[in-house]
Length: 299
Image (cartoon, rainbow, N blue to C red; front, side, top):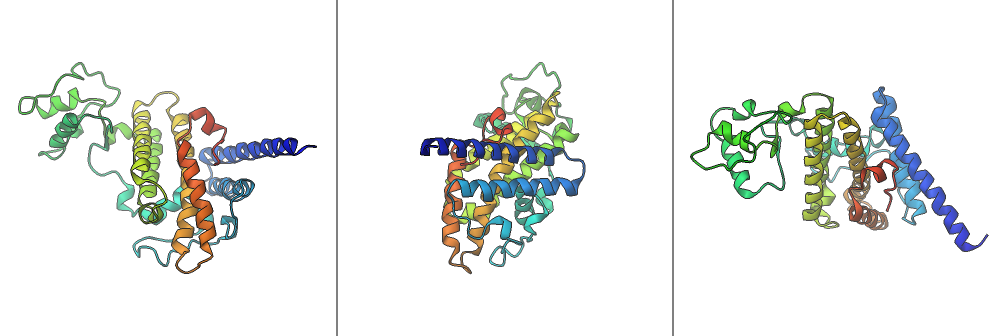
């Protein structure tokens, strides 16, 4: 067998492992038993972080499989540590970087469309910070609104009419009632945890502005899907949750090493490998749904 044939065989086996990781992650998302779901998620993450990174030539010193608990002694005291095997990478980041208050939805709208023009954004914020709770009477996402898209004139258009004319430019808490909304909230929490991650803010390994754009787009897409409540909304949200889990695994790997580097100089090699993997992943992330479903995501 020639060297080219060997390389082709290795690539074929690697694709099989990636598909296996995707299957484990999908089974975890759908499993009714929370304990078993966590076990499947951990197995998928270990396969992705250790086996596949080894095949890709990354350093495996201090791998996730041998790590029993993240070292958080040099992290913000308000952050709560969590045992690495207790859940998915996304759950670990949420546990580390979001307090109980930040995990709940407070106030309306939950989010305004990122690409909304500044004028529309200002109109919605004037309504939001005005008296009363006007968003409680806002039309639901699937409501038919005849005046949607009409021009809002400051001082002339009522708050109620502002919300009608800017319908589909925002998502409210009422839009997220139901199981689809719960999935969307998990995506919101995960995006926020990644953005607050210490290595993202202090490590200077990735361009935070570019990451923020990607996370903002993912959050808005998830909210719109949940609010629309289509027949395939649940499956679409699970796909996006898997996409976020892939990113979270790479971020957690780098973050854990980064938080330990002051106490363990040997973390330098591991940090370099994890940073390279994260940058490579972000270059193509998020993936198309069909690609994400087959888990062709490793750098």
